[in-house]
Image 1 (cartoon, rainbow, N blue to C red):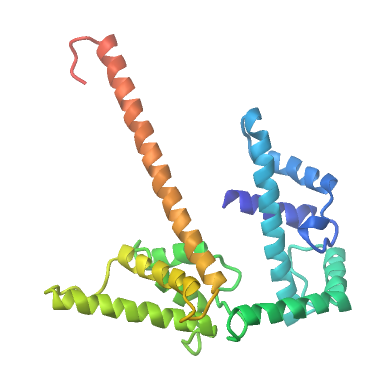
Image 2 (image 1 turned 180 degrees about the vertical axis):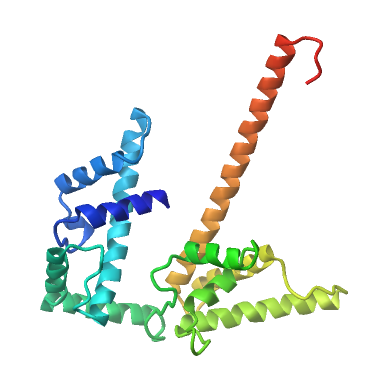
Length: 273
């Protein structure tokens, strides 16, 4: 997250030209951004190649994301310039979006997405510019430290606040399938003598993952809900990364305690540590 914020700050302060896409950014500009990035982060010299590669990947992803956000802002109000863009950059981007060839490409891509989504309309997300990770943290804080499961996150980020309904048809059907599976499991538990009123978070996460993966593999339900799968997989990967990081730190602490105990016993024989 810190790296993403650092790159966003670079865009705000050093984006001097309205590049149409990440591939149009010249190496000289990229080098300048990397020098700025290096002012905020330090690393071992032998990691420079890996850091540079990671930086380039993040710049590409971040620029695509911000280009999309800027364009949506332009569509809603062409006169309202984003606060993080220089006036001449904003003007250049608007000129690019108004080109006939740009509009043609956008229309073609839109039709392709409609086809991939089984004619269920455009993907609609109601989370604003907040990432799903940010929304998860906010919901956890609001719920006294209890983390929401993936199904709650999907519903929260795709439900219209006024109508309380999911505007995206694929998401709506996905949420219905998740609830159906949840009720099925609760019924099975009840028949087995359990009085539980809801499923544990891990069980709900597993239901969501299975529903999403099932939709991708089966033609019985809407195919290719890519945005849902990416969100869930990203959360799952982050969970696994955090778990691995915690296990690594626990192992390091355990090794350190063992070495310290051995040192103290050698330095202070007869003492109980």
